[in-house]
Image (cartoon, rainbow, N blue to C red; front, side, top):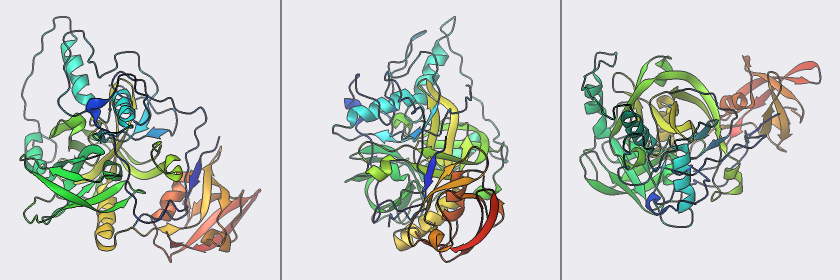
Length: 457
């Protein structure tokens, strides 16, 4: 089965992803569309998922570790406001599934918060997925209390995070730079980018928002406006007007990150502000397709492919979206954006956008209001073996001018082997317009080579 990967346009002008509804009003029988709500089953992935991978321009300005059965992902829009109810000994929390696990799926950690018809859908998703939105607190409460004796022993220890700093020191350094973001449509997290009020978060946290409020670690709040968004990387920049003394987060070099490095995630899962979880870098350069929402445009509902992600087993749940993933030195290495989950809580499969990508994207959003990416003009799908098959070619595109045709199988770009459709998307979007790329492909049994000059997305 082949999944489609498209590199084509996704609309015009900067778009804001739609957020989740206010959790407090979710009905118990509400259908789980985005995030599975507490007590509501998560959506089953389609039997034959075919995530769309486009190279056409997109104009816009963690427990066991089961492997996800498919590329199916869903947006995790957040968690209900307020602290979750902690169950007594042997009692499963009302907002947490206690049944047998089901195959995991990918979601985005956001947090619902606005009124409207989507309310039930969002909360439902939050529960079923329980990994993006507030599931961490519930899981902890259940496991700590569900023992033979019903008693709990908690020991306070200051652990060394491995780079000369303790976890306590890391948190003290980073917490002032992590904020909670509340809109009329959703709730999530963010990180302070500059002293003068620029804050970075996920695109899906502020999507469709009419009002945005930022809550800082010291309890103060301020109104903010959306500066620009980039749905392709699921990033957005908002700004608090009149600010001049915020504490920017320190950016680390995500290219230097290695598997096994310490990670610390800070955010507001389930509305629990300033929540800290720890783990390690589990893998590098992950790609996944995140399914869209019913409320989004037809193109967005097809989902989007995120590439180059960091994988971590630090618990990430609804409301963590847009929050910080830092290393053992307290430097930002990623912005938390998605998780793989079952209906029983965080299973240690969280994903973050690398800090180097974040920094480059944010700089362009602030300066230009949009991000320029390379555009090839083909839709590609995975094959049974290596390579990516061209499913369609945009007329007049760089691909068409280079002689590429439907049915060709791309096996390398600039000498780098192509193993999947997402590899094509990553290579093209990571290259500036005007750049010539050498594409090696198979037409039938014959290997051929051509050069294409990428256009602007």
